[in-house]
Amino acid sequence: MNSSKQNLRVQKWVASISVLLLLVKFAAYYLTHSVAVLTDALESIVNVSAGFIGLYSLWVSSKPRDADHPYGHGKAEFLSAAIEGTMIGAAGAIILYKAVQHIIDPVALKEIDLGILLVSVTAIVNLIVGLLCLRTGRKNKSAALIASGHHLLSDTWSTIGIVAGLGLLYFTKIAWIDSAVAFVFGLYIIWTGYKILRSSIAGIMDEADMEILENMVRLLNANRRENWIDLHNLRVIKYGSVLHVDCHLTVPWYHNVAAAHREIEALAILIQKEYGQSLELFVHNDPCLPISCPICAKADCRERQHDFQKRVEWTLENISENKKHELY
Image (cartoon, rainbow, N blue to C red; front, side):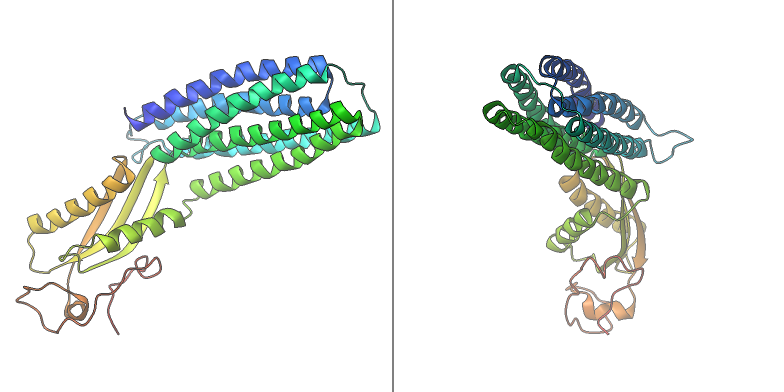
């Protein structure tokens, strides 16, 4: 299945399930009057909103490129994640306000045991759906699905904490525990929102993804071909699930266009095997110069002007530089 379609299908499930869980949590709040349960319910409002925003963004990002968007629509995923992060932070702020309000003006709680049961069920469902989102998002390099997965998992952990707090309240009858639990998880939810917002802004600003770059450098070093004399000016940009890679590849100067193209094809196949078919590769071919001879291990080169001395190991630092490598 096409990765964009798979992402869209998973997000449809996320949006639908989030509506059901919202209803369950508000039912639990209606039964218990617990501000901790209200914390969970308020975050679920964000889940529902974010779920449908994410669904829309994945629909937009799955659209083919057009004249107005020659690089596709993948940036929509980062905008979705930014909105989701902002909404999570706002929900956390509301939770802090309600927690302080209930400390000042306590509300009598009731049917805590039933409330614990209901919110426990929502935690299990969120855990399953969140893990599915993360697995699919990481496989398809989808910022929107990864954000949804982190959001659902943060909701799971906060629900587990709330269940633990409600259990302690149930047995001790200490009323302020309810508000204290809500306050702690309000802070946690704000932190989660900040991390999602920070990540999405990095994507919008085309910030270098060091993890992808480091993995790609290891991949290229391990599978280096004889005619890949040098590789530099490597850059990677993510547009949703599409990875755009461009670099300068130095090949023997006497290669014709067909031979040079074969080396580019080999480079594209290598990266596609690791990162999937959603890849755009732009390679500028450079001819080798005499300064390349000491780092060129090509055995049968009849144009060699200097003896081979040692291969330059590509690193994250030197492969990103916009200049050919040389020993001295």
